[in-house]
Image 1: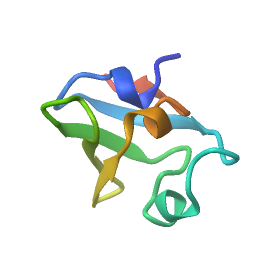
Image 2: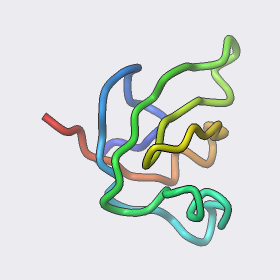
Image 3: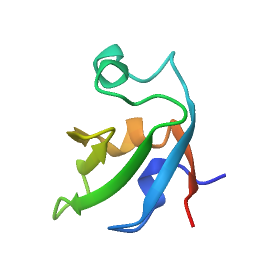
Image 4: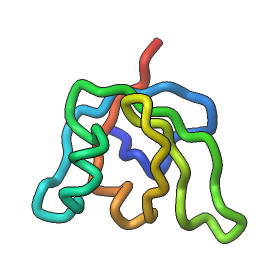
Length: 75
């Protein structure tokens, strides 16, 4: 299962698993939960951070945190 850091831009995914021991609670408050949809909008020039839409919220996430969020691509 791919993680949030390896998806391509403008591809919608569904969050499958969030490692709650590593992901900050603030991201959970912003909708980073299993079952919610996410889309990568931008990658910073040095590839960190990544800028997503998650559950209608715009969120910047560091690459090491995005690796802890497992997703599946929505057809």
